[in-house]
Picture (spheres, rainbow, N blue to C red):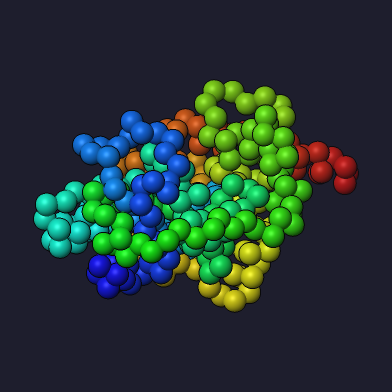
Length: 285
């Protein structure tokens, strides 16, 4: 089975994966388990970095990663089913029954960062965590033992750079959450969004991380997965949003918040830029 999984992930350009028995996982949402309680989980990292986003987070530059994950889950489930026709498997990304961050760390896929992300030695934190649950015994899949959970160097650069201070005071909202908020934004929320030139998401805590600096310097941070190089949009504009068909728009990570949220953010940021430009012009007169 080690060879089976190795060959599968190698074909998909996924380097980092591991297996855990379900007993080693912290179950947070048991209701999400489908049809059966699994015996094991296959955790893996999907790197997504391709280019900088101009006014959106890097993870949203490409099409919605859930589309890639769905295809990958089906492929891996079919591989397992072929070898074990009596067993079942299903996958999750993001909204998982288990605490993915801890499971990934126990699989040795990376260290846990102060920013609440898994940080990999090759791709830094520009990775998605995927989980495939199965009723196949973990030892059959190659499990030997869980690794000790490791943490980052705790330099606190991410905390110091966080524009809202949420990494220090968790009662606050992060900038990414502000850009995704429905309805009206208050003056403070609007100000931090404008200051950081974003209409969707935030990468600041990742950008300042020493692990990211090392990955960029070594040239390893770029994803080798073709999916993330297709149909990239690194800058969102009114035209971009309005000219997308519903089908195209629904393939984007920001689609779940509808066009209205992106339009609101664009209107607010563009208005602020225009007012700032007028203010600067009046000072030079």
